[in-house]
Image (cartoon, rainbow over all chains, first blue to last red; front, side, top):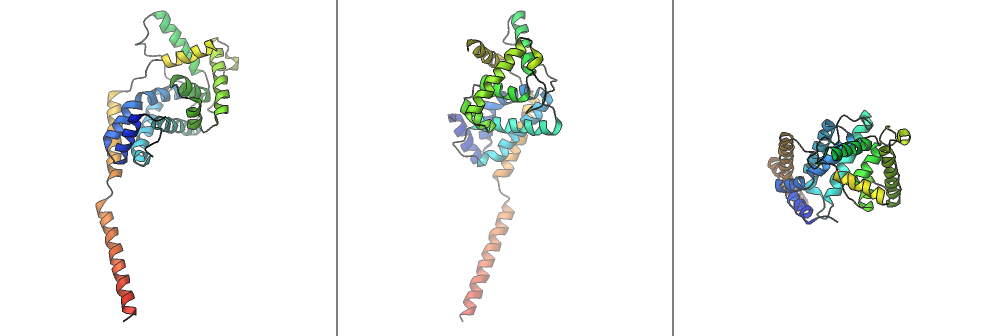
Length: 186
Length: 69
């Protein structure tokens, strides 16, 4: 269900008012960027894709329907940008960023280590598993919302989320035999 | 199920990834520019198009009325 601030942002965008962009940016920029960094494993690439996503908002935003789900729209543009880049460059399995490099919320070395281990295990998953877990787990989107973003039906999303959870558990247990670092859809 | 739900909870606890302030400013500036350029149609092009349509309709009207005289 679109939030009230989404509607306000879309109304302003429809009038070509840059405050609409700022409103959407304030609501979603951090989340979209975190999603892209964790999906791509590269801060530099994430910045490119992030820029692309928000430039698309400036371009297409004025024509979006007022009842559009802005969050879902932004995540759809962001993940499509990643996949189209991954298809052309085959970058889906490479990680050059430490996903747990910030520990502001972690108070003890043990907790920090656990977080790093978790982030490392997460980074060994394939891109298709990462995006599912990021959208469903980190973003807290519903199965229906994830299905809409990925262009799949809900039953398929449920099955894939379940499999991705299993693979993450296995990666955390150090069972790397079932964890593949292959491409986006592999 | 509790164990896997804990997995999702840990995903939610992953720390924020901060955006560089300079980068953010540049994205917003470019987006604002693009938004403004799309919001304002080129006035010259619009006027030229409207003028052409009026001229054509005027000519068509004159031509049609000449046929019946």
